[in-house]
Amino acid sequence: MTPLQQIRRSNHSIRWEVLLGLSLFCLAVISPWLWIQSRTLLPEDQFFLSVGHEIPGWRFSPVTLDTQTKKTLGASRLFNGHFLDARSNRVSVFAADWQRGKGDLDSLGHTPEKCWVGTGFKIVPFGGPSQLFISFGGRQIPFQCRVLKHPDLAAPEITLWVACIDGQCDEIPYQPPLLPIENSYTLRAQYLTLLAAYKNRWAFLSDPLVFRSNPAARKQFIRLSAPMTTEWQPALVELAAFAKRWIEPY
Image (tube, rainbow, N blue to C red; front, side, top):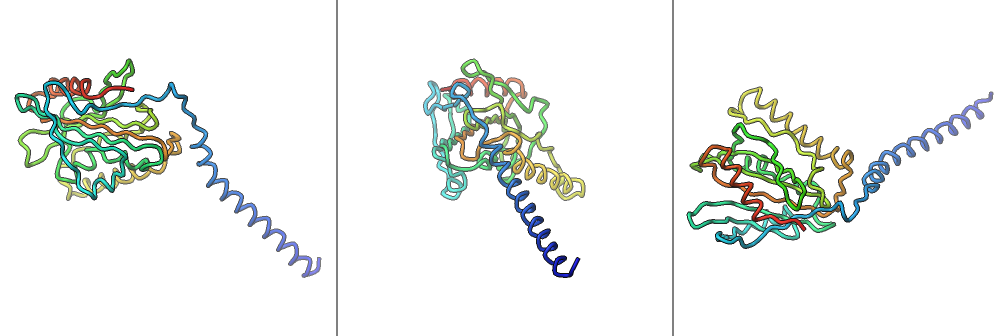
């Protein structure tokens, strides 16, 4: 074989290698998109929640969110404030609704165990469940449950929250509850913090592929909380009962 033939054959092999590499790259990019787009939800599978602005026996006091928070959330509708009864018992509420094409999947990541912790709250163990199912319209909706304590508050706050993607509230891939870290300066605490950050980042990248969540889908996030001035059992029962009065399916 002459040197010229060797050069031609080499060029031919390079072209095929480049073409194969480009094909594999395009397949890697397109396949996840096709996987996500292949999910179809029938109308009867969708289950949305709405929140009431008025509850008999309770007075609502709105709390306006600052401009930067509103911009970060990018929600189509926001509802935020406190419900107070005749004995000044408080239930703080928050609800956000993103219409199709608004926000992204990361919009649902503003949970108390992330946002509240950033403002001075600490997650505290309370012996209760990390998830509570509440029935709405004959359907069991899973609410996440946590107790958090702020040094400026007399009582810890017990909170419930739920997120929905395209009317599906039972397919949200929640991470396990974060462990309470008493001393964030120890080597073990720093390791746990890095591990939690890695898990959350990996979940943010992998969950849309595994669960085929559509970033352009309609999204909802609902949260309610109250001071835990009693044992966790009656506090949780009262908060769940309030949720039944405040939230309605449609």
